[in-house]
Structure formats: C-alpha cells, structure tokens
Length: 367
Image (cartoon, rainbow, N blue to C red; front, side):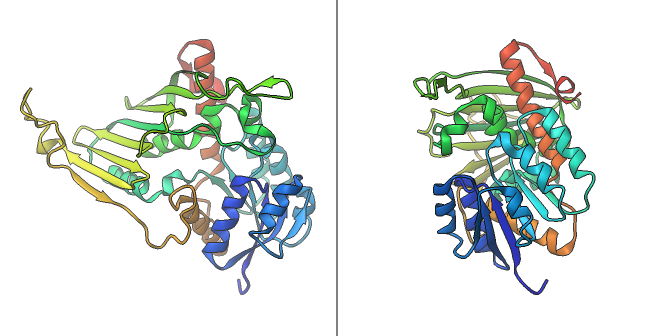
C-alpha cells in the first residue's frame, strides 16, 4: 500500500487515546477519523490526532470511506452493537478486551464475523509484554519441563475513573474478572495450550467504591479475588487479585512451575527469573538453605524497538505493529475472537462460582 493506513478510533476515552498514541508512534499509519458521543472525549482525542474527522455515531464513521481499519475501544457493554455494524464492512477491525459482557453476545459476534473475509483482531495484549513473551517462549521450549502450575498475582490500585463512571458497574463491564482479568486467563491458556475444565473462585468488594453511588445505583465492582482453574491435563492456574494493594513495586508477577524448574516475570521492573530444579531442588534437605534462590538466572527484558511504552510496557505497541502487518500482508490474526470468547467465559464462570459458592464447569458457560 503506497499511502499510510488510515485508522478510525471508535471510543475516544482513555483506551481510545492510548490506541491513538500507539498508531502515531508506529509509523505508516494515521488516525483519520474518531467517533465518540461525548464532546469532551472528542476534543481530547482530536488534540492527539490533528486533522481527524469527528463523528458522534460510529456508523457514520464506518460509512465515511475515510478508514482502512478501525479500533473499537467503547465501554464493554457496547462492543456487540458496534461490532455488528463494523463486521458488516470490509474494514479491518481491532476490538479491545473484553470481547463482550455476555456469552450470547460473544456467540453473535462470532456469527457476524463468519460472514466476512476482512481481518478481525482481538485486543489481548498482555502476551506481547517483552518479559511475559520471553517467559511464554521459554516455557514452551521446555525450560521448566512439564508445566504443572501457572499463577498470576496482580496487586494494584483501584479502577480509574472513566466517562460516566461506566466501569463502576458489573452490568456494564461484565464484572471485574471479565473487565480486568480476561487477559490473565488468556495468558494461562496460552502457556498451557488448553482451556480449563473447571473454575473455582472466591472474591468480594471489600474496600473500594463502597461509598460511591451514581444515579442512585451503588458501585458493585469486586476489588479482590482468588480464582483457581483446573485443566484436563492435570495442570492448574491461579489468579491472585487485589485492587487495594498498590504498595507493591512489582505489582504483576507471572510464575510458571514445571517438574524441571521455575520461571517468573515481574512488572514494572521487567525482570525475569529462572531456575532449574536440577540445580538445587531435587537434592535439597531441610535447613540446607538450598531453597533460597541460589543459582537463579535473573535478567531484565526490554525491547528497544518499542517506540511507545504507554500503560502496558510496550505490549500495545507491539500488538499494533502485528495488526498493521497482518493487514498489509493479508495474514490471519494472531489473536482471534475465539481467544476473546474463552477469556470472557472464564471470567463469567469465576463470577458464577463466587455468586453460587461452587465449582463451575466451563461448559456451563459456553453451552
């Protein structure tokens, strides 16, 4: 393509603006159109993409002839309605996580997508964070042997304010374990190369947003949870989420443990740590001090090709480059809508488990 790829951004809130910054930094692309019903969001986004045409309705943007690709970054509960229109075009589509807030909407989206030939890309960027990506590759090439456990810990600050406070309500977001954590569930599936069979969770709203009401409705987003995933292979995954634990420096820790060793990544330090059991674990005796991490390999993983770090350590930039290249080379999406469906289903299963106090089969959600 001789000219720059032309992008439309549908949804000009904080994530929409993050996408604009990545598109600008990437090169070979420009934002030519922005759609959002909120006038202030329009103005803020336009300051980042001077010359882009503004729309209040996404359908007018899709019909404008001004774009080759669109990024959908609207509130979660609007994704299905926007995608119904976007997937009826021949425009390349990138949709932010989560894909939708209900399984029925997810199924409808898959049906709409099956009728078209243009590229559709699911925005699940965490796999592209350089330290996380290296951990995944090393695990898949056997550095830890057979993988038995994958755990993710995120101890962070509360949800940020968003336009019209839409992210304060489970009905609009799908719930914390869909809105915030679907990309973590997707990571565990990628590492283990399978989907969970059973989901068990415990969680609640203990600290955050307890005194917040909007239009008379109480904010109801969970702020802490443990989620356990069981896989047919016998492997297990676990999420440890606390959204009032911002005191940690490394607020996101991914751990992969196999019968031969252990891999960990730490964010924001962008370090990884690796050790093999043959170095110490198999012959260690109680009190010998061999479990102290001696013999571990520790390094910082930074990708110098990233031109915009943003809020995700450059992962969104890498994903945008891959999306752009897939458009130009007519290659399939590396992250699919099916990835989006499963990650939403696991989050919904976790919420069902919390609500009903029982183990939930993933098949209950998907069928």
